[in-house]
Amino acid sequence: MKLSRFLDMLAIYGARTERWPDAAAAQRLLAESPEARAALAEAHSDAGRVDRALDGFAPAVDADAMARLRNTVQRRVAHLPAPEASRGWSARHMLLTFSLRFGALAAMAAVGVWIGWAQPMSQRLDTASADPLAPIQLYAVPDDLP
Image 1: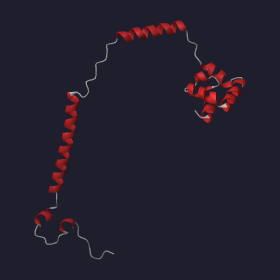
Image 2 (image 1 turned 135 degrees about the vertical axis):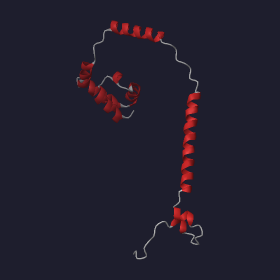
Image 3 (image 1 turned 120 degrees about the vertical axis):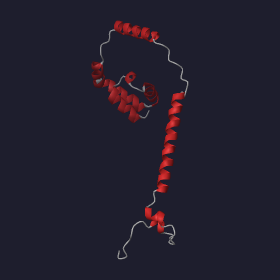
Image 4 (image 1 turned 60 degrees about the vertical axis):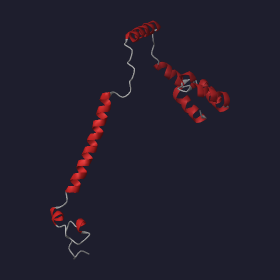
């Protein structure tokens, strides 16, 4: 963790590093950086304005209620059926994949055949033309164009 990130975390999460998402990296930086230790000491001496604000948002949790909830969840999870082992690709999935690929290939082949046969009628009737550019001359072009 860099010092700039440490200072940001200090401003966001307060001086108690156990609240920080990456507390281990903060402890490593504190061990090797006198600037980080000074910033943390200053935050502690500031009367912990951020810490007090964060402590005010912490909900009061009854330990007995949490133990009952944890036990209830564990009992319900224990009674759930075990998940089936994944067998990889199912036959249904393979059939669907094959049919989609074959359908796309058939559609592309049909479009190719249609494009091959869909020439203008004048082009199909005039096969004795001596002009090699005749197949690409579809529209009459006036000679007076600039």
